[in-house]
Length: 242
Length: 300
Ligand SMILES: Nc1ncnc2c1ncn2[C@@H]1O[C@H](COP(=O)(O)OP(=O)(O)OP(=O)(O)O)[C@@H](O)[C@H]1O
Ligand SMILES: [Mg+2]
Image 1 (tube, rainbow over the protein chains, first blue to last red):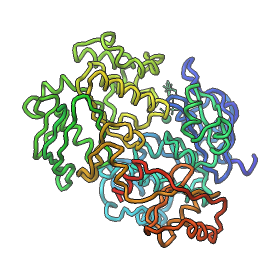
Image 2: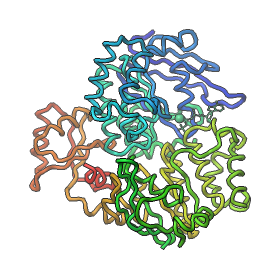
Image 3: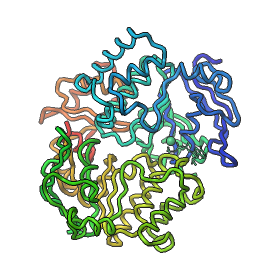
Image 4: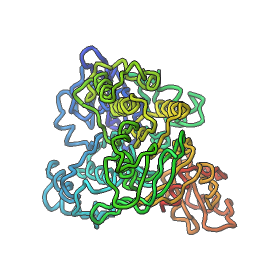
């Protein structure tokens, strides 16, 4: 495998019965890149992401993620990536600390390491006061920042974020992107979906899916040029409905 | 008045979700509640749709008291809660039929109200709601809230998770519903949508910070905002934050919005500073205030 490319996808397809949700997509993602995975509702983003993280078996095509094959090495993929699902990814009825301990345990971290990570993480996120509160009681933005940190707890090579900032307020949304930048700066590859077009501008490269196919893929700057549009929002409006 | 709220307060144990809230929404008005998660918007929606009792204060909807006339309110309002209220194991069409039947109507009778949104999910009408994508569920939930042609429509974050094209269409549809005389109270985390309301209330920690037209709210912003860009946005943001005179620094798409503490701010000085931080391709230019800027300034 090309060392620089941490995700390599070719002709990846997913069918549900005779409905094609993901239609032969092909693309690469480089190490340390922030890759924006855009598309209209129902375009197939979540379905594609589930194949890449090894929890859904593709109907056809090939994909290599973090050096592992999605067909044969799904278990290795899970250990080497982090994932934040479109729905909330933590346990509402566990406290902040318990959630961290729980997920640290799943990834096989030792008790000492978990304790250490837990302290650092709670301090960095400013969650000291609520560390022993149930996650259910936290504002959405805090939960999302916490679940991002939890997705990174085992220092994965790649982190997959499915609409992490949906419904999050403007200030917290920006703090979330600072966390993304920081992770990318430290070498983690970030694969992210969003419906906020200002966030598309923060990505190194962006793909736009339409009805299961990738219809455009480039840097935000080049996409704007290609579609003769002033903003990514305009690019999206021109493309997304096919 | 279509909605009238007087001195409403609501607490859960120690948490004051709403503190002495008052406002009025005129008949046929499109009124926005703008605030972060946890600001109290959902509690307010639940009080106005008679699902929750306030500790203090009174409110009326379409002329009915939310406590005494709760049955009448339930028949004349539509409510789309933030969390899905769909039956996951019923199909798209069955969900819609269920809501229509409950209110003694049919899909055909009010089809014109939902058509624009419904056509996008109609190809999947035999699919179970549980298998729809996140945004498709939002669209179905909206159709369900509209199908009995309510006088007042309550929408709690209806476009969260909805893609930009559909959001645009969705707001065009709200404008058309408004023209049919429906009063709309809507909450949203998208600040560009706030600008499309007739009036908005900015709320935080259970209190109303400001109520006005979006145009007037933007005018109250105290500072000149500058668009700043450079080759590396991440480093630019860090450098701006470290600048001793910076007042606020927020990434805004391809630019960073910057305000300075000083009233006699000179962009040339800032440029020199950023150059000293090894930033290149610098652009610094004045830009217009948006609702998002105002909101972040108030929430600071
Ligand atoms: N288990 C399933 N069975 C049948 N159809 C499915 C299933 N899962 C997803 N789909 C369909 O596949 C298509 C793509 O769905 P997906 O969730 O991937 O979209 P998305 O791009 O993530 O959309 P959103 O932006 O709304 O989250 C949709 O039409 C959806 O209804
Ligand atoms: Mg999705």
